[in-house]
Image (cartoon, rainbow, N blue to C red; front, side, top):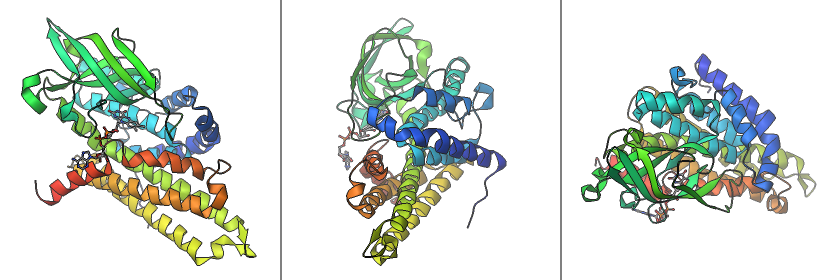
Length: 380
Ligand SMILES: Cc1cc2nc3c(=O)[nH]c(=O)nc-3n(C[C@H](O)[C@H](O)[C@H](O)COP(=O)(O)OP(=O)(O)OC[C@H]3O[C@@H](n4cnc5c(N)ncnc54)[C@H](O)[C@@H]3O)c2cc1C
């Protein structure tokens, strides 16, 4: 069964597929080896409209919707998960500014994010001691006249050293619990914003992951994104959409693992025949195809609900949970099918194995997705 997309969805997916095949895939192994941030490719993504797929055209976005976004992330992740995550976070930041920002914030940030002139947008929620539980964050923003002074640290911030703008969450009222957190737009290079350690990661090696410290970092009151004290609402809304992005990444990863495995299984000979002829191998391929299709369908369902303006949090959590867990199984099977060659970097499955691992962790671990889903199941 084939689901036809609208003209714009098909056009965006085709653009992403072409770019992934011709530009991203040939560079992926080298980018993984060197860990070099792919500046040039990011600017190309901007020129193609893929850095703000679901952002209004009035602000420089492609205004192509959530389905086109999901499909473009799938295509990129199939080629290079590092590039896909960099692109996905920028899209998420752009969408969040488009939804919660003032006209001035949108006019300032969105054209720069969409075009790639700003190489990235970043999402500064996690802290060294607060990941799954953002409500325990320690970063503070203290009001002084019409300014706010930020102090604290953020951890694991994708593209935090490259970002033109970072959405930073900070506590503006320590006595107000989860109603005392506010989101701020902090531009790269603001005095007091200090870029810390570059994490040496298992995978996603050409994406940048850094710690950020705020040392009396001063921003105007007009930097508040959304309303004072409503920061967690902004974060949770962004994460719902972000989960579609990670589910799409995982779906693209399964596709890449499957394609590589099919190719290898048809070529590699053992006991006088291609290994694809062994039922154990062909059944693994059958399982990978099935999990790919299930992940894709769950992801596109969540995207379709989002695009229709309907609630999609439960569906996004299910898609993220299923696709990221299925990706772990798929990349492991792909390595197994490649035998010893799967364990070395002569074939891309070794990279897929490392890149996939984080998918059950970031933007809400699998356990947190289960909490979200269980709450819906139990009517909480
Ligand atoms: C490569 C990478 C990029 C990232 N990019 C960003 C980014 O751009 N912006 C950003 O803000 N963050 C980012 N993160 C952070 C990521 O979202 C967090 O690592 C993740 O949310 C988990 O938080 P934690 O690491 O503090 O783990 P913890 O919250 O300490 O969790 C540790 C373990 O305990 C489990 N656990 C915690 N609470 C519960 C519970 N209530 N029930 C059951 N189990 C529970 C978790 O599932 C996990 O298995 C990134 C992380 C990585 C690795």
